[in-house]
Image (cartoon, rainbow, N blue to C red; front, top):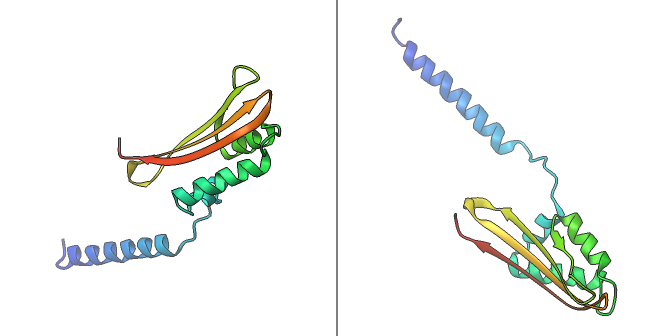
Length: 129
């Protein structure tokens, strides 16, 4: 091996590494922003309030819970219907977040004879598993 080969190889490797790092920092993220991410960027407390506000707007007290349940399904929630004419729609979602945390979201729509009587929403995170 000629003298200086290892030094030149290390310099080329450093230039390549710097180029890849620059591209990774500058390159835009083309992933679409999901509606759930729009909520979560507000913080958990504000996201909870905004989610409840949207559910109340779509299915106000005394109305059919269908529009709110459909919207929650399009957001990615998994909803279970009440067993009878009175009970609760329970819609939940869990998604992984950064630092190995799980974020849980829950919306409860209480109904009586098929009409909304009350709504509740909560969002909480759980530590690393």
